[in-house]
Image 1 (spheres, one colour):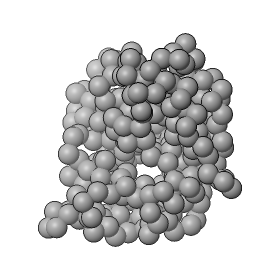
Image 2 (cartoon, helix red, strand yellow):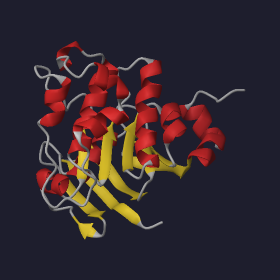
Image 3 (cartoon, rainbow, N blue to C red):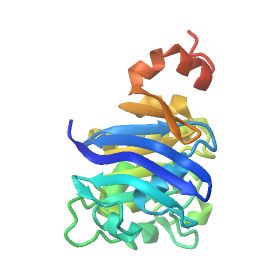
Length: 242
């Protein structure tokens, strides 16, 4: 499978601290690839660098290519305009606006190669939001807010959607609901790079998974391979059990 997103030998350094150390990740068209690991592993730093959102002026080396184009030197808004769209952890929603206003305020860039999602398209993806369309986002549950954030990103016509910890703070049933919707988007043709602390949940929806520890990838494989790896099960899943 040819890579839509190709991240090669990425390093992110803050002063003398190497936060991401030689990470390479590829995401094919219509594929969901997860990067999972504990807090502080470097996951958010990795995807911020991929999307051009890196804060604090870190030194970033390596390459980031989208559909063969080198985007590593482009500003975040230019990467987004090419279809590399990030939903950051815990952000992406205007509390004082209704669900409908949050979705309508986003417009796809001109000439985008990604699929433009209308507001109705987003509501088809997240039926729960149709029931809350006139509600202010400040009144929504955590899961509903996450759906709005993803919906706003879809309105920007992504070719590659990056999701940073979409399950954080959600009740278990809402984690399943949100990740199921994400998997449905992938099955419909969207490419997704998913960052998750919840390794078990990531394995339920990912095609492939990389485990990140202290800024380095320590294990990689298909979801099936990772489930069967005893070291992964004991270290990250607490033993899968019967």
